[in-house]
Figure (cartoon, rainbow, N blue to C red):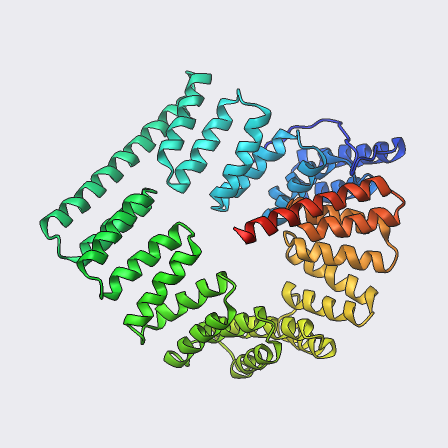
Length: 482
């Protein structure tokens, strides 16, 4: 169950202090929500907390309580969005970090959970339960040594914490089993050092144990043993993929297709990593070869269409998505329906990117006729309406899209921009802030916020937002150069 700690704090949003009237109204709604939540009426609680947020957008506690209600209603995405907005408004709201981390863990998002628990520990480094949560996240990711340190710290803080002791025993058993498994794989290699498959199994074991350098050393032995065997370079590519070494992974897959030019899966991987490098022409060529080898593969055709889109070759991308949509118009099975959905989405997106907004609107409407309330269809329709100057209709579709995908900072930003177009300045500020809370490195969100703040006459805060955007873009440029 999520933590449910109540207080009456009402920190201001964006450097503003909540007015006494707004704070009082929000507190009244919060109290109503608390009563509803205590009785198990979470729908009523959600409604009351939404009213509190509307009355006082800068009230972090109202956002936190809204997140609790949504979590108890089984709406994890809505809860996550509200927790993140609460944290943005009050970075010291530790229970929001804890609940967010636990929610991420329930969803299997251990990296995100780890980040949330680490933030919570910065606020309360003496909390033994938090160290257990941290250890659980590390354990879920397979970082057993880090998990041991976290559980041990929990025991230091509270020697009577039996869960810490139990989890510590469990992770030590896992570590021991992993060591035994790797030792067995090493023995198998020793027994037949010319069997490439045994080397590949050992590499998998090392990667599972996060022993990347050991895995690379084994790959080098494989290359020395069989320099012309594609299996060697497939294994090498998998190691570099695990390490997220983009250039090295691409080069390894290039070597595979040079040796085995009919390996469709290798062409798929090569296309992926060439696109990751920004080498779109090479990626397109790789995906075209994949399509040649597997012409009936929707995945191959989608990958080709998407890289054509990313390369801004919109007419070719539109034709490819259109053909996919045509081929699956009579889809009946679930898999075929999903393919048709994705084809419609890709087609409408490319039409908008190509400034063919009337076409995009027609595609989005056809999409919605077949798949009502689809968030991507609603978003593309909103984008088309926006570009055609039909801003009120765009807002309606953006808001509907956001209900279906509340964690999409891009939708939030575009909605904020459209609010600006119609003069809804406060709504634009709120939505731009929401976009930033979902992704604090979202430079465009800060730029939209700066425009809204400037329109509201808050020049100093607008300048701060622009500085944030400039810092993010500078950091991105440095990463690109590296």
